[in-house]
Amino acid sequence: MELRRLQRSFDAFDEAAAARLGLNRTDLRCLDVVLAGGPLPAGRLSVALKLSPAATTTVIDRLERAGMVSRAPDPGNRRRVLVAATDAARSAETEIFVPVGRAGAQALQKYGPDELAVVLDFLRTAREVQEEQAVRVRTSS
Amino acid sequence: MELRRLQRSFDAFDEAAAARLGLNRTDLRCLDVVLAGGPLPAGRLSVALKLSPAATTTVIDRLERAGMVSRAPDPGNRRRVLVAATDAARSAETEIFVPVGRAGAQALQKYGPDELAVVLDFLRTAREVQEEQAVRVRTSS
DNA sequence: TCGTACATTTCGCTGATCGAACCAACGATA
DNA sequence: TATCGTTGGTTCGATCAGCGAAATGTACGA
Image (cartoon, rainbow over all chains, first blue to last red; front, side, top):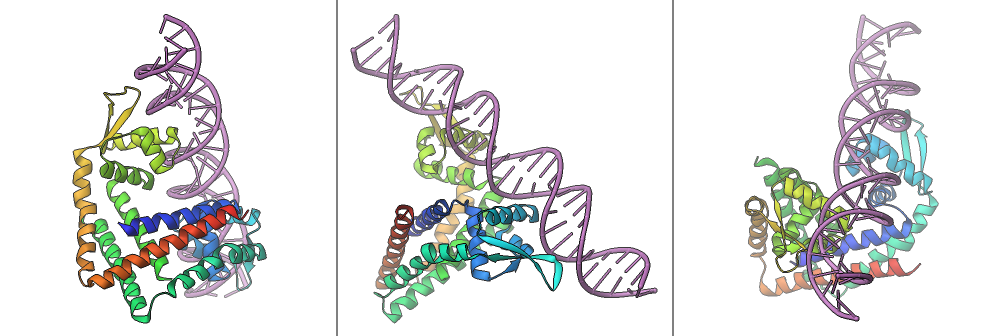
């Protein structure tokens, strides 16, 4: 199925990006969340990445050592640690991820509005099917 | 982007399937390859999964212990070990993976031929974009 | 039949993740 | 305002997946 191939290409891209930045996949996902979601507490990362708090701590450690994020205590609640992307992370973003979005938008220009609607509908439908099936697999003991 | 969401739903499904079978993601991928590609030598799995030969051996060990695959020496070349899916694996396949295909096909019925063509073209285009970008990231040192 | 190449496995190690214990800070309450 | 349960995060010890290198056993050409 073509969807599988697409999935693999995403995977290959992520791998290339991680290698480029000297990070592992988990760290890259974390960086992605931090870049997208602004400074956010470690616990939020933990649920976003579906990692234990302990593992999340070490992920942040690695990214901090790599100069990609910084820790700061939340002024409003000093138990919290706010994780923020550094300038290095932002420049990596513009260099690696932004062009993907541009290329994608460019490629979409060949479609008309109704074609885009079909594509969007397909993506949503496919997602719904996957989610339903995931539920089925989880619940049908 | 909707594509990201779709990707995550695939991920969630894979996770659910792995949990259901008591396997980890790598083992599940391996099982998928074996189910799809008939009995095949361990080395082939190694390249398909992009794992070292050593890691592949342990993956096969785990799947064998779980009763999902069996090892047999290749009669034509006794250095080789042929890995084959067991009946248990096949019944897991029909119980977990086959319905996904069915549900997918079902969901696609609402599209006409030209709509399907648009969708297919989109999937290919998206993949090409990803692949190009992966190359860019890899090469632009 | 000897030596080299090949396919897989074994071994020792590194690194990511987990659960449990721990520590600090918050907030309710009496 | 002193206390106590709760919350957010880190530390610690253990586990497991994966790698590279060496070992094992098989095939094949000189």
